[in-house]
Image (cartoon, rainbow, N blue to C red; front, side, top):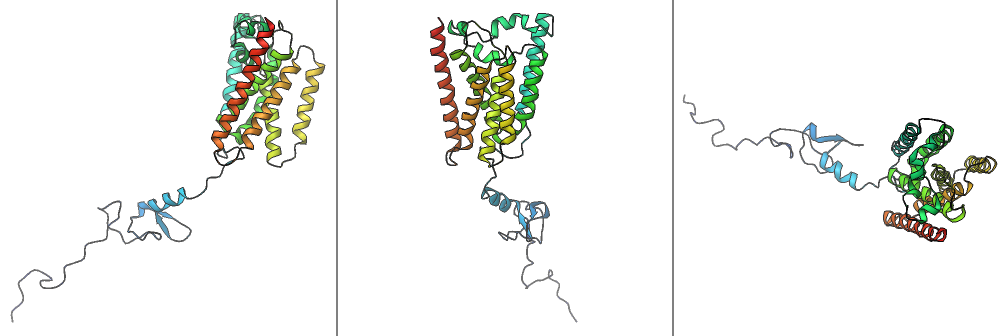
Length: 291
């Protein structure tokens, strides 16, 4: 009896090529994506509600899911960053003035106070930086402590809703609001300093945010009322700066949280820019009247 001497499967169908992963051609696999049915290796598959999907299908699905945002359009759940940064800047500025003055209690004797505090007549004379730099100076440790405590307590909630960039914008425009109120209604030769205008702006911001979210505002309104009362009864506190910051902070935040969803960012940027320009124009007019 003779046996065939040719190669195995001679005359029969050729063996099938192994199925390989579409992303890794060097890897054989028996698995497939439940969505596109392409072969994929375990590294390229992700568990889905039913079966497994390849990473490409997962990416396509993620693009089709609407991203959750806060009422201001920010990503929810972000860790506050601007609040501790602003607190650190204010503390550093206080330390600088204390070193210059050689005293913590009388740090206002530092030369930088003469150069950076808000004095309307000097602003009108061209020293425009004072409307911003004055918001980072504090007279004594208690002044600093009260403002930084309020910034820490209120600011974290506001930043979590507005997001970092919008929060910083509201803080700075509120600072300008306090300076504008001083320029318009304070004596031209009285020096003013402190972050209170910006902090009151955050109080107004929090009230508007709660109103937008239909959350009871009683505690925040009570806090604002207490701080306004303190501003009235304690001497050498600029009530005008506080009210200016409060009003501008509320207005700026309203523009953010009530912005239309379509073209939200453009609307918000335009509103905040317009508000800042308006404040600068008012201060320019007030400054010209002091000369």
